[in-house]
Amino acid sequence: MKTAHDIWRDMLSDLEIEFSAVSFDVWIKTLAPYCIDDKSRLVLIATNDEHKLKVNSSMKITIKLVAQKVAPYLADIVVIVDGEKDDYSAAVKEDEGAEEEKRKESVCGIGTPINPKYNFEEFVVGKSNELTVAAAHAVSEAPGQKFNPLFIYGASGLGKTHIMHAIGNSLLLSHPELKVIYVTSNKFLNDFISSIGNSKESQNTFRDKYRSADVLMIDDIQFISGKERTQEELFHTFNDLHDAGKQLVFTSDRSPGEIPDLEERLRTRFEWGLITDIQPPDIETRIVILRKKAQKLQCNIPLDVLTFMAEKIESNVREMESLLNKVVFLSGLTGKPPSVDLVRDTLKDYRNVTEEKIPPEAIIDCVCKYFGMNSADLLGKKKNKEIVEPRQICMYLMADLTNMPLETVGNVCGGRDHTTVMHARDKIERLMPTVSRIKTAVDDIKSMVFKK
Image (cartoon, rainbow, N blue to C red; front, side, top):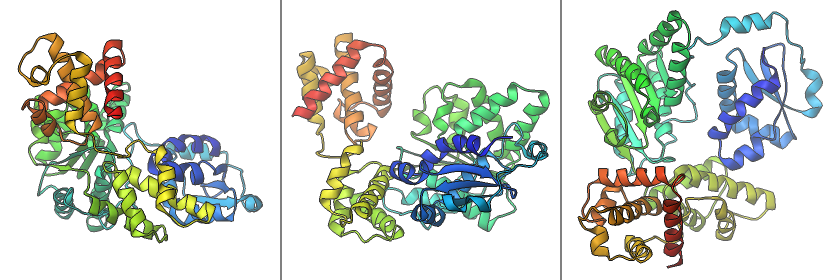
């Protein structure tokens, strides 16, 4: 049987995903595992009473869910300080190991627990996501009857996973009789690999598990790209569930048509229902998100400070909330009220900071200067190698350095289709680690752009 230290070690990687970088470093990593008590509770030691209060008041539920994912037999989490150790026994019954075996997951597991903190009430709706949220509500109210499948795509940090969990939480309240399974695509992949490496019974267990779901939600489906056997298994799982009127929900960082190496038969099924995207929120919505988060943290932050944060991180809500958490923490630590200067001091830790918008013309100009060519050739129709490679680098840099949609990048780069931009972006991204010429050109042109 795993010890408390083993369980805590296995939990940390999941907890790092669940919490912001600051919260993880300050409140989670500083906890220490003590024991599993005689009531099957994982006992953790906090550094002091304030630490204990913070974890118990706002983090315990998430920690418990992660703990039960790692060790399903755990009944609860207990947080204590050093002076309370004597109240808990570190002894573990000899027969508990056998009990654990009885409670172990089957080869395909039980999915990932639905996180109760991600619900519709906590999700801020704006123009960038209102269609997606409306569709998610419709699915949670009538699973299998509308928008089946529901396919949600958008960049990282915009709330796709939040919406998936919100659907799950809503269903658990309104339709508790339904079997709702939420997994990441990597979880589905790993379960499938485990099943084919075992007996026929294990394979049947895997299929029975996923194909008996009333609602199946798979996050980050783009990671099945190129995995033929997994795609085949998902294809048959999709067919069985859809034919039975069961609800399917998928998220991805790109639309089905943009996922490379995806079987056409699976792509078309993703397109059967509703495809909806989430765009980066406008500044008004970002301010509302920050204000709501600040209220939850019981911190009064002036509007000018919230606005400054919203202006500086435009494209990733998760990083914006992480910035807020750090500002609140540093304010409490130093005794200084949240201010623009305090925010400015913390921005260096965030990669999605927007200082000045980079105009596409600046990128075109720098690419032309670097390769010694004119913009007419760069953006034109010629397809010789000495022009195609700089053109692909140009499209890659526009996709990487600006917030422009791929369609807009294509329009700027001579009226090209967004799939051409996607191909160029992915190709340059793939070549940079192995082709020094490409890596050097990209780095040098970036330096030229930033100096403009």
